[in-house]
Image (cartoon, rainbow, N blue to C red; front, side, top):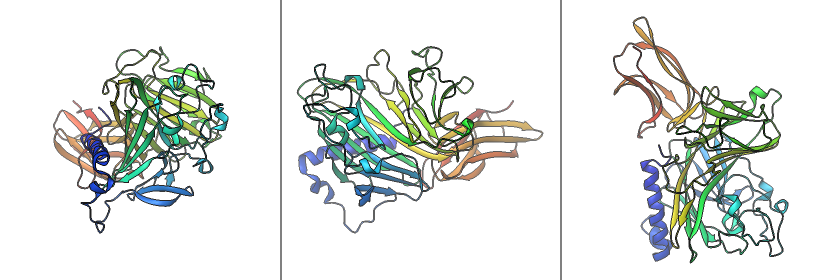
Length: 450
């Protein structure tokens, strides 16, 4: 299933329409119909002068907080669940990334701000073959150029960046736009990114999202923060039986731990450097705090949901351990050929919750640490499972279409179920989360016991 739901697709289309109207009519024309007295919806973005000491935009729906930096290339600098930061960001680097000069710039002169950003990918294609500097830093206008911001009436924040113009980058003439939308009833932020080719020649790029999560190094490796993604589900992994390619710290068995039973890759944050990539087709990668179970999930379109080429050695997910302070959680789409005037649109989701135990699966409604089980117990049924829900509302257990039990749920607390219920006849049991006034979102499913 693609990370772009029907609501997400509608927001993406609205983002395109707003962008077109701004080009044709100007920003004032599309905002003229909104009254200044209209109250913003829950989770709407509003301007602030105090995001890490700089101008920015904040959204707060009572569950999650999102903050976008106006002086940081429109990147996401804050994403919090119940007051707990889920992103690492260097406050001193906001607004302090120097542009490369014709004489070159080393990667050590480039200060990475952290947070969440999107770059053209892959990195190996960034620089022209005749550039005097290596494959770093990222394209300056796309990474930290002067973006223009447009809050919309539905609470969405659009940010339009400048076209890349630096001659050392192959992506000269590419332009990036963000559209941020915080779900009013969930710890879920949708980020629609539009990569446009405004150059006069064809280009070929993917979209590469990097989220920097914090790391706490603990004495017990079993309590380490982890990054998890699912093994490839369709066909063999191009990286062989291990399902991953190590780019740094190969064969570190304490750090890289494939889970063959759950069919996921677990990467433990142990305070040392290392990087691995995988060609996962499951459409998610997740970071989990080993102390309190807080989870940050990046959801993106599954393999095959986006048209584009998959080059040899391509990876869709990666984890880059940056030592004792942070870890990069990465996702990349296939490369797409873009003619002049063409665009590539992707909707990503950042979702948060708390869960008890290690992640084994991610669904639209949340994460699973113990799969749903329904067993016969005499004349009753025993229902068990452990989850983390992205939305606040009701978790309902259904036998086929009939509800047989329900529990309150919230992203701020694990949803652990172990209860006996009257026996129900049917083929399939499902558990779904429904926020007030919202649609059900699947958490888990299991066949009925015989």
